Image (cartoon, rainbow, N blue to C red; front, side, top):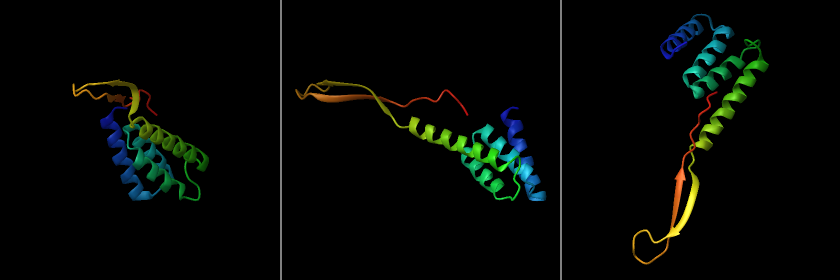
Length: 113
C-alpha cells in the first residue's frame, strides 16, 4: 500500500470509529498510523484500543505493538544525538593555542519498524 492509500485508510478508520467506536477499527487505525510514520498518534490510538474490555485483536497483541513502538521511538531519539567520531588537538586558527577539535555526527537509522 502506498502513502496515499494509507492516508485514505486512516481517514476511513477514523470515520468508522466515529460511527461505531468498534475496537476492530482502533487496531487498524494504529497499524496504518505506524505505516505512515505517525508513531505518537499510533501510541495514543493503541491506548484508546486498550481501554475496551475486549480489545481487538487482543490486549496482549496491542501491548506488544505498543512496546515495539516505544522501543523504536527511544532508538530514534538516541540516534538523533550526535556522537563523537574523532578528536584532534591542533592549532586550527593560527593563534598559537592548541584547540580541541571534535568531529561529531548523527547516526542514520537505516532500519524501519
